[in-house]
Every structure is written in structure tokens, then in C-alpha cells.
Length: 278
Image (cartoon, rainbow, N blue to C red; front, side, top):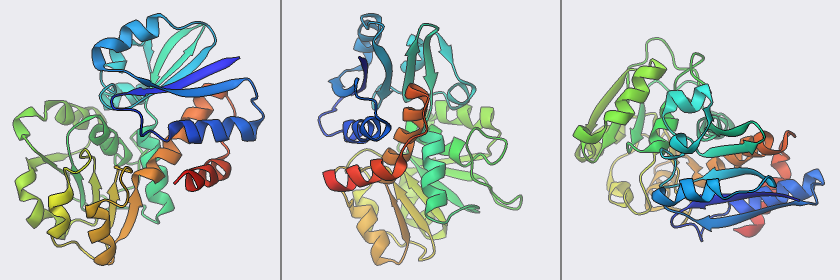
């Protein structure tokens, strides 16, 4: 018997159990189970302290990605550089914090045919935005796409630039030049971006659906409930390639399966289960 779960708040909408359960079935891991657990920041340490040896790992979503580092006994270089973790791998050696959002984002963007964005724009400043910086960090980063040397800085539009200190610190650790601006500038900035990654929570990016978008751009909205979002719908209408939070969910879960089980994730089986659940 081996157990794993996804933790966060709210958590009832999470499709992570669909993906991990499909992976276990495809891999023949009959004794493995994966569940949802409602958990807020101040409850994470107590929950983890109470886990038995049957637990293999935890997936962590909002609002736990930063506090996860404080309950880990070790932190991977990628999670340390990003400053956030979405995974705790549990075992006799302790609790290792990992970040699979960054490689998951990079996988999803490569799958969409994007390999070298020259003018990337990130919306938001939370843990997922920090992972997005890592996905754009290039070969020197933990999981990056390749950006041309002539490319300018990564621009981040945030609700309060004065509170974007952790995002700036992540950029410094990754060696990424970051230009932080107010989200109020979004209507003017969106038209120039060849990659837009929205890490804003559900509904927060809806007002941007009326802004002009570059038809050749890739628009990546990490929200998947509901889908399509207003921003994704507008992007399709503008002729953009769209990457969804479902694509991120699939690929980051694949990396988690590898970390927790030690086996290669059956991405095709996981993708089929996700499509059926939707």
C-alpha cells in the first residue's frame, strides 16, 4: 500500500487524482492510491508530521507552494532557485521539496511549438510565476526554453510591483533580467508579447480579454477550471496558439509520477484519462 495526495485550498476541483490514478493503473501499481486533501498554509506542517511510512509524496497547489519549503528536510536546486515547490517526495531519507511546474511549463510550450520566445510576458507574481521564470531561464536554468541572446528582459505585470520582491529574487537567482510593471499596463503590453503566461487566479485575467494580442503569439493561461477562460477564448479569436492549464497539469503531474514512483510516466494514458474526465 502506497499513498499520495494533492493538497491545497480550495481543492475539490483538482483533476490531479485523475492523472495520478491513470498513471498508477497504466504502470500496474495496484497498491497505490491518490486523493485530495483540503489544506491551508498553517495546516501543512501538522499534516505532514502525521504521515506514516506508506506515503510516497504530496502534490501542492495554492496556497502551499512557498510554505512547502519550510516543511521540507531537503530542497532540490530547482525548487531552491525558484523559491517555491509544488511537490514533496516522502521517504526514509525525509521530505524533499521539488518543483515540477517549471519543467511542466517548458514541456507544454515545446509541445505547442515554442522554443525561443523573444518577448515573453508573465502576468502575476506568485509561486507559479516564479516557476514560469524558471521555464524561461534557458539552458542555464533548471528546465528552460532557449531565448535568443538579442531578446530583451522578461516582463512581469503584477497587481502591486512593490510586493513583487520574491519574484525579483527568483529572477536574480536564475540570472533572468526581469522588468516588473503594473498590471494596469497590460492592454498596451500584450500587443507586443510573443508569449503571454498568465498565472493569475481564476477570473483575474478576464478583463484582459478585450486587449489586443499579437496573432502569432502563444498564450498560456494556467487556469483550467473553468476552461476555456475569457483570455483563452480571446486568444483563439485573435489567431494565437493557446496552451491551457490542463497542459501544464498533465506535464507537471508526469514529472511528479517519476519522482514518486521511480518509473517513467505514461503520458499518453494520463492525457486520455484527462480528456475523458473533461
